[in-house]
Image (cartoon, rainbow, N blue to C red; front, side, top):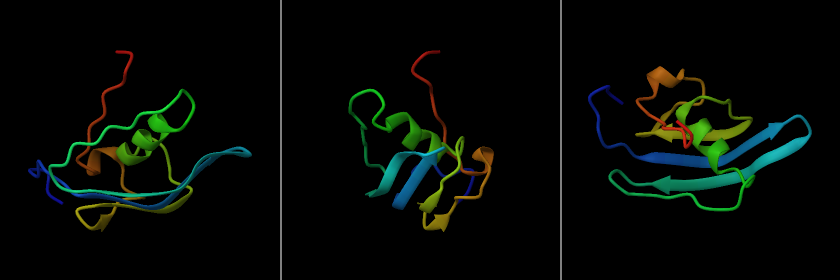
Length: 90
């Protein structure tokens, strides 16, 4: 992955997130091809924002693997991922 990359492939493999005793995400797996447009929809509290925060590196993944262009990025800082996130309430 380079800082000049504009289009990246994203893969989530069995991603889990838990806060305290509450499981937020359980075994989420998906692949997003380079250039593909994806939208996450669902009711409040279903984990959409949590999933985006995990991809951006703002929250830590409890289990599973997050790959960007085939590179595991679970432990990379947000600035090292080449991913941006815009919050709904700005």
